[in-house]
View 1 (cartoon, helix red, strand yellow):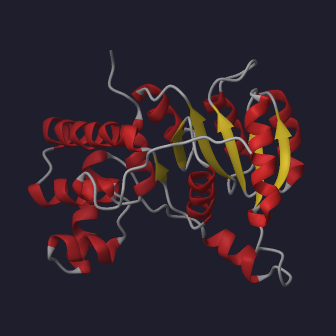
View 2 (tube, helix red, strand yellow):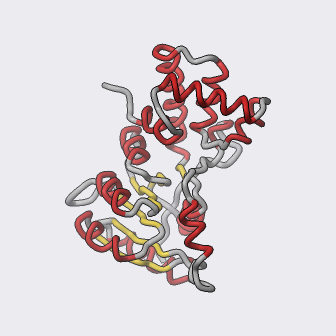
View 3 (cartoon, rainbow, N blue to C red):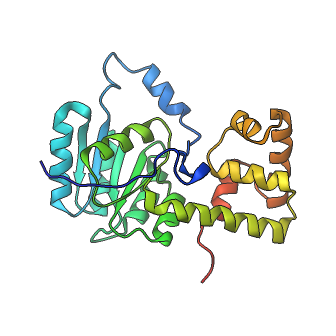
Length: 251
């Protein structure tokens, strides 16, 4: 079997930014699992979109160990957009550099068609623009080549639980993002210090009770701060708030 390797940020590295980010909105997946026939949801269905045949062979061998099944094997975006709607895949491993369309654009189109599909972006070029655009396109994972078998398995498992999986190399991009949000918020919206802290917690994927615990306040106060954030930043949900600032700063 071929071997790939990757370094990911351990849970206690980079302070609060080392924690795995959780994603909201996986209620439909839980409902699907609740109605599945016995054994149906035990083996994830994984699709692969990459023009490198070595990746396909590697994941086919890895799937052969019983951890998942390969639901579709595509070498370009056109094949992915044609095959994946009928493939019933749970997760897609998406390379950024495809011959006909960028993997990020392909991911965005797939999320429109299949909003519950979990997407793990795979790249050998960890630049901030690709990272931000991947998140904007709906990716839950951002892995840097080379990647080991265990790291692929861990990433697939985590995104299916609704978590984000980020390679260590992109953690500085996330820190940059939160700092950028704080600066813009102070300049444009006059957020209070507590609102800024709440904003940082939201970008770490914390839920209301976790924010309350982290800041030493009650959940009702968290709701109050969040209402202030939404009103000042002109958004109506956490999703809108995050999307508002995920784009990289103008050059």
